[in-house]
Image 1 (tube, helix red, strand yellow):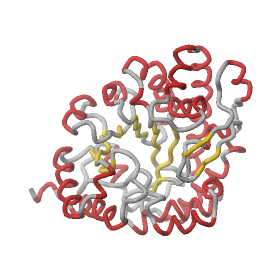
Image 2 (cartoon, one colour; image 1 turned 180 degrees about the vertical axis):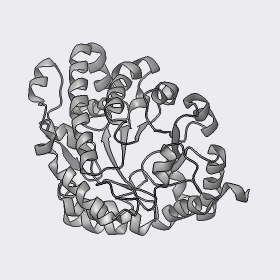
Image 3 (cartoon, helix red, strand yellow; image 1 turned 30 degrees about the horizontal axis):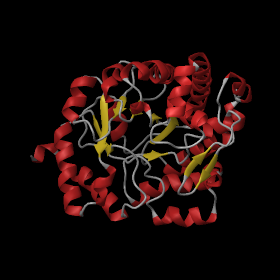
Image 4 (cartoon, one colour; image 1 turned 60 degrees about the vertical axis):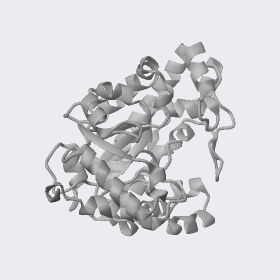
Amino acid sequence: MQQEIKNDLILRTLRGEATERTPVWMMRQAGRYLPEYIQLREKYSFFERCQNPELACEITLQPVDIVGVDAAILFSDILVVPQAMGMEVQLVEKLGPLLPQPIKNQADLQRVRMPDVNETLNYVFEAIKLIKQELNGRVPLIGFAGAPWTLLCYMVQGKGSKTFDEAKAFCYQQPETAHALLQMITDTTIAYLKGQVAAGADVLQVFDSWGGLLSKHDFEEFSLRYIRQIVAALKESVPVIVFAKGAWGSLAEMAATGAAGLGIDWCIEPQVARRLAGDQVTLQGNFDPAKLLAPVSRIEKETKEMLRAFGPGRHIANLGHGILPNVPVDHAKAFVNTVKEFRFEDL
């Protein structure tokens, strides 16, 4: 039975319907900038927080209760998928992810398995059920997964990187092995996201954090062709938002996937993004997260400028990437409240 959602602004915006105001949420809103989250971080390791449905639920709800956003996003991590596929993943606080046995060649693919997501990732589905129960229809719940290219970056590089040149070299030197791995990740991700929808997710977002490291041609070959499969498999069930940071040169092709929304970062102007993406898709973004460190008066002024630049309709206000850990909660609230109070008819 589908629960009625009281604040369905985001769902209506993704369907292209007119809304009384622009909806707002923030990437990485559940977590590191909130004192309530930091208290839990001191007690539990990162994957304990992800794998315990009660903790994941509590963390997911924090920004809804504290900051007043228009959607909850599941507290989890994109690297639960490589983990489910048999790879060891460590998350080192302040250093980031570490995969001690990265994939370097065809032989290493033998170590990667196609998991039964209902066994390996059941804790995520249990968390979603619990979150939906606790939300009680207040706002929609966004589920998510990493795009196959971004997951390959970590699985091959073995750690974070600004350039991921080892991952790129792997694709250029061993394209057949790369495509075999990308297809395995894609099939696992589709099963995982279908499980999230079955558990109650109202919207899905695919994060391609490293899509912008590829040329337009390579983005098509190593990323978009796999994102396309994911969107095709899920778009009839729930709206899908694709966020490929830095890959704005492919916005037209991403819009053509049938995604309901496209996330954009702060390096492209809203008018340019709209021209490239067309008017049949909702744009999401694109406030620079570092600007949340500015004085509150400037946050309010620039948030209004962003809203005017996107114009009414077909826009979800968000950051152009995840919120930074050192953002004061009052500054995050200032961003959210400015969006919530803004009306185009007041201009």
